[in-house]
Every structure is written in structure tokens, then in C-alpha cells.
Length: 403
Ligand SMILES: *Cc1c(COP(=O)(O)O)cnc(C)c1O
Image 1 (cartoon, protein in one colour):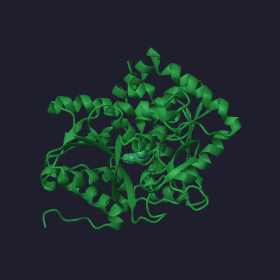
Image 2 (spheres, rainbow, N blue to C red):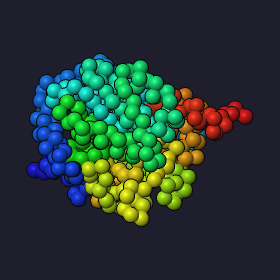
Image 3 (cartoon, rainbow, N blue to C red):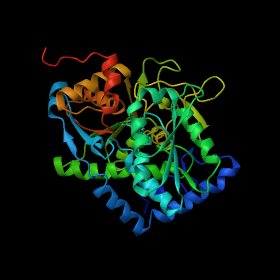
Image 4 (tube, helix red, strand yellow):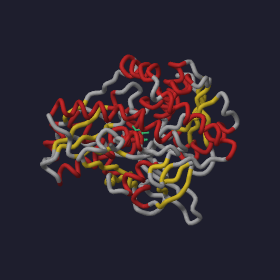
């Protein structure tokens, strides 16, 4: 009998086909090998699984619901749109799903400090939350540009007891924050764990983070069946590194359900105007793993842009590169302005203010619903938009609904 997909992928060296792996400086090889061995054991340990289950229920407030969007579906006049409400997960996004689990791994490994990068600040807030819960020290690296743009999250991290370190080189956004966090981690791998914020980085992180996020997909599958008596025709999510998308996709990979990974088309198709890695990128190694990435002429990670600061990353998790290469997933695109439109539409038709990242998936679902009127569409609403409202209203006038 063939092993289920989630058990057979990645292979023991962390490869999804040719993507993934652990491309590390020699001084880090033993560290990641040890984390990998430890996770293999933990993922089968009753105590670990049981502790995580309790945290999901009593601390995070899971399961999060599925909401049927009657008004938005009627407005679009096509397929039926449903949302998996990760905006209602504690801290307001899906990221706490992997942060609580990564912190629990750190605890089992006897580490005392968590270190990480953050883009929009959502991973930083989620990790600082997890660190507070487990009594661990926490240091978050963040691009200077993002610190200015996402200031409320910076304050939140500090209130939660974390130290925020600005990344001041290059474009001063997510990629630079990853570089800076890696440098800090290299100085002490004994007491620190680098808790990566998505399904990226060297093995075992793409696998671990996917497993920790799969709770979203497994909940959603059961809930959707209970609500409608069948599976959705299509499941979609926005992709930065790809953790919320892998989370919801993972439960449907072996079903006949279409999967659409939505990439940020930004403000144009030239290098530096978007972050659509799968659409415009090519194979390359960055941040310790082989995947599809946006590169400049010298093969270095290219500058990227998206209005959603949690999705402006020049690569994508190796599992996304693999699933796309074998044709299991499709790519959707959403521009900055389409995401703003969806941000306001979902707010005014459903009373749900989405994160600008999540609005990319909503915008694509609206386009798709119009073209596929007989289908039911499940969107992973990865987070809430409170963090984005100041930026949005300063730059895009609020539409009047009852004109
Ligand atoms: C970080 C973030 C994302 C992008 O990260 P993935 O790993 O691609 O899921 C999407 N939505 C929200 C709300 C985020 O905070």
C-alpha cells in the first residue's frame, strides 16, 4: 500500500522532488540534523501531541469557524464563497498555529530563547506571544521599512516582552530580516531556536511548519463536509512563504479538489514590482533551501514588492514549488489594487476586515467565482486587517456602499 502523501513528503532529507533540502554552512549542519531527529520523535510522541491539542483548544481558541459569505457571493453573482476564519485565531492570524508548536519544540529541546524574522510583524507578534506563554526569551528581526509601516505590531511585540532588532541593509524588508536573524542565530545555536515563520528555510522547517499548519486544513475539511455534505470544488489561499496555503491545502492534496496558490502581482510585471515567485521565478538556492525564486542578473534574490508586507518574499516554500511543478496546484494572481478592492468589499458586504495578505486570496476567489458559477470555493482567510487600516485609509479613499 502506498503511504499517504503527508507521510511520504518530504523524503528523509527534506526533499519534495528536487525542491527543499538543507543547504547550510558547515557549522549549522549538525544543529539542523539534531532538530530534524528530535522532531521525528516528537511528532509521534503522545505527550507532545496532547499538549499541543490542549493549547489549540484552550489558548488559541480553536477550532476557528468556517463562514459562508452569502452577501459577497450574491454580489459577485457566481460561485459560492466560504472563508476559513484564521482571523479569529488568537493574535489574529494563522501564524500562532506554528509558533505555539515551534515554541513547544524549543521547550522539549531545552532551549531558552526564540529568535526569528518578521515581515508584517504578524510572525513576530505570534512568536512573542508563544514565548510569553512558555516563559522563553524572544528576539525578533524586522526590516526598518516594515517597522515604520507596521508600527502597531512593533509595539505589540515589545509589550509581549520581545526585543525587536531592526534590519538596516538592502531594501530593509522581509528578506533582510531573514539574513539578520540567521546571523544572530549563528552566534549561539545551543540555547536559541530559530523559529522560522513559514514553510521555508532548511529541512526540517518546511515539513514542521506544514504539519503544524495542517490543523487548518483538517478542521476545514470536517467543517465543510458537515456544513454542505461535500468537499469544496476549489480551495485557495495567498502565498508569501506559503504556510497558510500549505496548511489548508494539506488536507485536500489527495482529493479531487482544485488548489489555487495566489501570488502577489503587486503593481506590475517587472522585477521589483511584484513578489510572484512561482509565476516569474526560476530554480535557485536561498536561505538554506532549493526552490523557485525571483533572481536578479547575478542570481541573487531580487527586490520584491507587495502591498501585503507579509507576502513580499522573493521565494516560496519548496513544497509549493513541487506541487506546482507536478501540476497539483495552480497559480492565481492578485494585484495591489485588486487586493484593496477585496479588502473593502469583504468589509462592507460581510463585516469582516481582512488582512491585505488575505485580501489577495479573497480577490482571486471573487474573480474565480464569477467565472465558475457552479462551484463552491473555500478561502483561507489568513488574518484580520486591523494592522492595515491606517495604511489603507491614508492611501485609498473609503468607498461609500450606499451611494
Ligand atoms: C504572514 C502572513 C501571510 C503570509 O505567510 P504565508 O507563510 O505565506 O502564509 C499571509 N497572511 C497573513 C495574515 C500573514 O500574517
